[in-house]
View 1: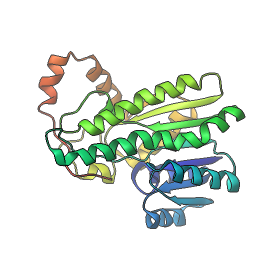
View 2 (view 1 turned 90 degrees about the vertical axis):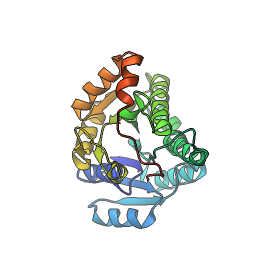
View 3 (view 1 turned 135 degrees about the horizontal axis):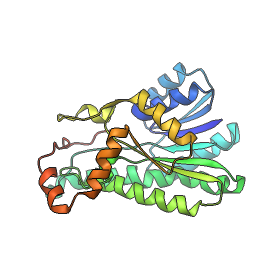
Length: 253
């Protein structure tokens, strides 16, 4: 098995790398922090290729894909996990750069990750394209307009891709985590219900990928919350969401 993972230097990405290494997979680990990638690869008992890159750079991802394919073969699973988060306010002109960065990473970074592999996977007639979205994309969260919108876009993009790949043999899986204990959530100073350890989350994700789930929310309790959030009338949602905790402003990697 060959697995290509972005955002692999920490958090969910590193947990996924450990989980697939336990299965003996050959790994491609991509992220911006070369040192962290090297440290992770050194702990894994499998062949691991590291690619220090920014997923917003389509050319860098294409080069990494070409290198991995030439050295290990076409991946069986590609996981677009890289993401950034920040509290943002439209009224603050200084947050415009954060909006741009979040969309470039969380939306275009996902497209850039899949683009080098999609046609070859279709031609082969199999594989998995896995996108990490978020429960935050189900409804717009106050103070997190960029992050919520980017994850809502990820939901829609992955759904479009899933339909495009229908009958190709390529499965498109949308993973929507709730609160996972990672560096991204460490700065949150508000309650995070059903907080899940990253390695436990990765094990849940592997099970969803194995069964070719179209969409999976984890932990399951957040799936219930997400369903209720979708069903709430706007007037009720607005009143409840206005009291919710808000992400601190300043980009979180």
